[in-house]
Amino acid sequence: MSETIAAIATGQQPCAIGILRLSGDGVCAALDAVFRAGNGKPAAQQSPRAMVLGDLLDETGQVIDNVLCVRFPAPHSYTGEDCAELHCHGSPIVLDAGLRALLAAGCRQAGAGEFTKRAFLNGRMDLIQAESVVDLIDAETAEQAHNAVCQLDGALSRTVARIYDGLMDMAARFYAVVDYPDEDIEDVQREQMLDTLRTAQNDLETLVAGFSRGRLMKLGVPTVLLGKPNAGKSSLLNALLGYDRAIVTDIAGTTRDTVEEKVSVGGVLLRLIDTAGIRSGGDAVEALGVERSREAAKRASLAVLVLDGSRSLTAEDEEAMALAEAAPHLIVAVNKSDLPRRLDVGALADRFDNVLSVSAATGEGLDALAEAIAAQFPAGETVGGALLTNARQADAANRALSAVAEARSALRIGMTADVVLTDCEAALEALGELNGKRVRDDLVETIFSRFCVGK
Image 1 (cartoon, helix red, strand yellow):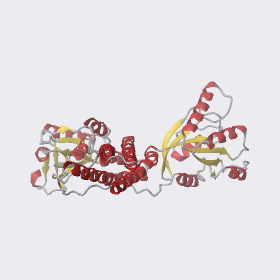
Image 2 (spheres, rainbow, N blue to C red):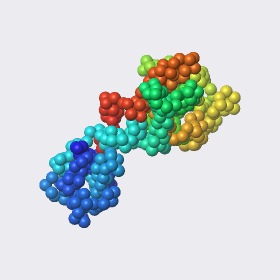
Image 3 (tube, rainbow, N blue to C red):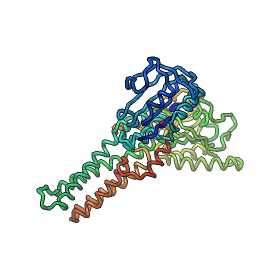
Image 4 (cartoon, one colour):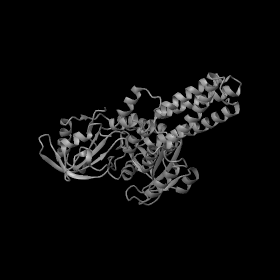
């Protein structure tokens, strides 16, 4: 018997629709205590997966809302248990009263991620799919959402399962031959083992190689705006964000510290860092800001060098250029295209590959800047959902890859099969941690603690 849990599955702000969610063996009994169907039938007699109109009752039996109720009988539900949802008007007062009524009817307040945890424990999804639920909720770009929903659909899980099953089949056949020598069991041939290990290694190398892209997709590309004071870095930051995040004045050196924000530009999530203008001199506070700008430039994957197109190049511009050139990716944005041009853009184009004219004040050239950023970080040809996106997954995949490589190497140099299979079992252990087949209880608790209540 699973105790019945309940929670508000939507936000705490007033909205059009609010949802109360239940799961457990006592769902029908709880519904009968708080929901009075318009057709007069008890919950157990309502058609599964069909919305039923009725009244939501508080602890005293008073009507607090007109709601829709839908029931999902086990095992064909999100958690694999009996589940139900009450779709209310999205008043926090109504939702709180409804939840109190459910708790009074014998439900327990659900913990963080407990619905998805039950889905995992009941075999409705593996650990990769469970983690993708959080990724989907937290998605900040269309690419993130697409990768997460493909993982939820099992794209990455199927790849891991294919590797796991291949290694398990090889190990099982070997141990069957050893344990039952008198049975007519075909022995595992060396070439078959090499082929299985080669395929597993190739698949794992592809997964591990995709982690860096998956991490950038999820966390955002560290992007630094570099340039001398008053080149227009803060204005460009505000233009890309669509609101005034950084203070902008005509006074050089207004920005004294790094200002960081996330923004999607050209479909690429950027962790955008506005920096203090690069120059010598200034007071002690500005000097600290410039030093932080240098440190931010060293950590950035993308540098957007902002130059003032209304002025000729200066020594400060050259210093900013030198910093920007050290970044793995670089785009030069010649700002203030709305003003008379004094900067030699042709000379810049001879030195840099990506030189664009923009105006942070008017928005001119921002679409071209977005296209240039998208070209620097293309989505690539990786099938949606096949990207590892968190450190736990990458660590397990790396350990599996290392073990498979060791097994393959041992087989090549003529080690006995039992030595090879020791490494093979280590790979299986790591893959089991990746998809949850062999995961520790404490790790499960840690993973689901990241979830919101109601999911």
